[in-house]
Length: 306
Image (cartoon, rainbow, N blue to C red; front, side, top):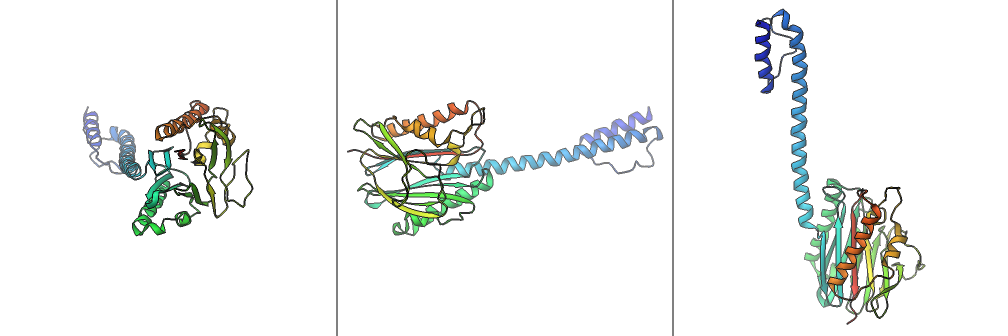
């Protein structure tokens, strides 16, 4: 009875967070010595669990702060217009925070600058790189518009991030710089707004790719093209084309091109946003319940016919 009463009191102390000594005190009844050692192991385990829980709570707090910062800085979903250009973009992180980022700047003279980047991996570290790149664009815009050139934007650490930047002018010319990013797609439309041809957007001197765009630029490359009224440029990250179905097959560039071919853009930001959403829905249907293991970003830029 004396031993049980003593152990009961000691158990209450352990429950309140007390740490037991390695060896039982001299006053511990001999009949309770073995139980004391077992209780000591329980107390040690509870202490480990308490510390682990505190670490988890702190990590969750940090993740929540990072998520709020990431979502407050980056335009995860946005539509807009500037001069003859219309744009609609969306970015979905695979984790609480992601490494994808995109941004736009409405410049003077009805010029529109659009940039997209993909930091290696996803999570807090990648989100920090993405936010830093986005901040660099913001800082550059504050220095002066004359510095907002496509070539100036992909100057970040290309070992940790890819980037594509495009400048659309009111005459229909798109000037771009690519730092190891996925090649965007260029979509021609007919008089009714149906997409009739999809090709990769490559430098003028490079070979035109009619059937696939599974190509990366190995260094910063530059180019320029003239967009006809009604033409679209589709920017994306590899999280979109690498999205997999239950059989492990990737969505791929060909399916993206096929999903675009025959689709319609009647004009205006609402129609462009609808096309963006239909493409993302097509990727989701293909995945058939398999969660994304990488961030997915898709941006459509179109030159109006009027």
